[in-house]
Length: 175
Length: 332
Ligand SMILES: Cc1cc2nc3c(=O)[nH]c(=O)nc-3n(C[C@H](O)[C@H](O)[C@H](O)COP(=O)(O)OP(=O)(O)OC[C@H]3O[C@@H](n4cnc5c(N)ncnc54)[C@H](O)[C@@H]3O)c2cc1C
Ligand code: SF4
Ligand code: FES
Ligand code: FES
Image (cartoon, rainbow over all chains, first blue to last red; front, side, top):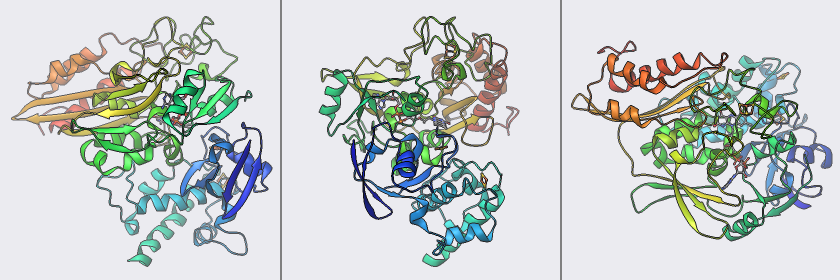
């Protein structure tokens, strides 16, 4: 099955069995091992990547279903010599221990902030009027919106610290 | 995963033809691929319907909304009209799965999601739903998540989803296209099947039929709510959930549209409840009578006995909250 993908801004061609998931395509066929395989069943979020601007579990979708789609992986968000502010915040706040869940956490958080900025409510939002003030995004909101990313090392409080810092800055910059 | 032939459909007609030829539809893939990896589902032909359209929410002539089958759960729960007029549906969707999964999960796929019974998931175990005639492992085994209403001797598993529960409360309608091109409308309250002696059939879709949309009736007022009890605060299936649209006018209950999730073998709407509640003055005694009625035929299997008092408390608390009584069901 021939599939064209735009990965981190680059055109990539894939010719693989239709059974290959997007996660396995990235890791085993395209040389991008940043997205991690935790459960392979949608239960942990370690495989989170951004497809056409939206975070998804790359283990629960087939690569061939994404012909022409734009995929952003952790490698596209930032590498060691050029870290994204969100990655820097994770370093500053110690938002990990073993680091296995971290690429998924960061891809997820990146897209989650866009969702909140677009006014998407969450299950814990009191008002459902489509307005979210990022500078006031509460820890409860961050935790609920990030619940699709499990951290077995339980670095949750530091993960929330890192995301809160970026969320609250983001609004400040645009205001 | 077993090998399969993959076909990408570009139009509804493509999908219909693929369905007529025996292909299995794949939408978000978040349930089907999970089950294919475990070889619980083994389709030979897969028809990808992600690019056939049906991905918008439109107003109907009746003043309601038509949610296309390929509308993602996250788009549905962020739609301004849904948030304004059907908040029970937005809340139910947001109570389910995770942000990542909701970005892929579709309206049609969500309705058709299969049970999360752990015996259904374990191919080394007996399960009538997965392999008819092998028996039911859950009945005398681990049955904490199983149903207490609508069970049969063959299967006691729940339909596990949240979105559909709100659609039952709203009395939505499923629009279905048959493999021969004809369209039929089915009230969502009749979409999922009781297990009876054919637990392998979850719903009323015939082979090759495509869900094209879910229709919501004209908005009704009232207080909308979705309560969900679960083992952790988020990213977990319900133990019991309750979708409610309740309205009080002149001190009397004017509307009480209620549906329960993970309590029965399908989303549970009991018409006796609204008959009993509507026209009455809210009171603790009334709510208790409603709970007695709801649970009169409930039957636990040991591990899930707790669902009976849990559903009772959830119903009473929801009605109290929606009608302005305090948590004990007395005038606040
Ligand atoms: C870890 C995890 C946690 C979850 N938690 C929750 C939760 O708390 N609450 C909840 O409600 N759900 C939960 N889900 C389930 C999730 O909501 C479903 O997997 C999702 O809604 C299925 O939609 P889909 O589009 O991905 O379906 P698919 O996987 O693509 O399809 C599912 C089934 O529907 C059929 N189908 C799809 N579209 C159509 C159509 N248009 N016409 C006819 N048949 C069709 C397919 O053939 C298949 O049989 C969870 C899932 C996971 C993996
Ligand atoms: S409850 Fe239903 S799904 Fe679970 S083991 Fe029994 S037959 Fe299978
Ligand atoms: S590896 Fe995809 S969710 Fe766990
Ligand atoms: S840092 Fe180890 S799993 Fe999160």
